[in-house]
Image (cartoon, rainbow, N blue to C red):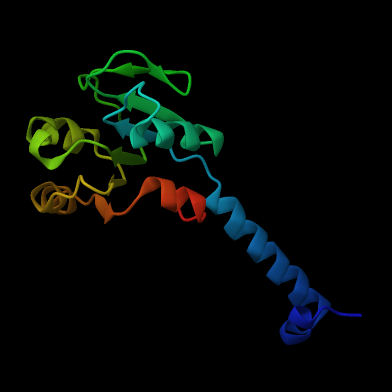
Length: 150
């Protein structure tokens, strides 16, 4: 018996194509997106810490950047000094009042996107990033990971 979903699709060839396309879309969602956790902290009660751990659990490599010392998810926290040129996403956990000194660091890293997590929204930085061709999202990294949209 053919599954009702396949009855709508049609031939076996179409079924294989549909399955392959679905597999590819799931595969793309699971690609490693090297992520900078800006505002990283070893404090396990903080969302930045939880996000770093979840990113690693989901197969993403991370760079932890912050003012605290220590490590998160087995990766040392570094100061915002070294520019990383291979970052796909910066997930931001620094409030807007503390962001201006980081503007050059963030923009010179030139990630593909910046996620402004709740409480980090900043229209000035967002405009600066968009002007440099950097995608920006007001979103929650933890939610994006949980629904497979990261």
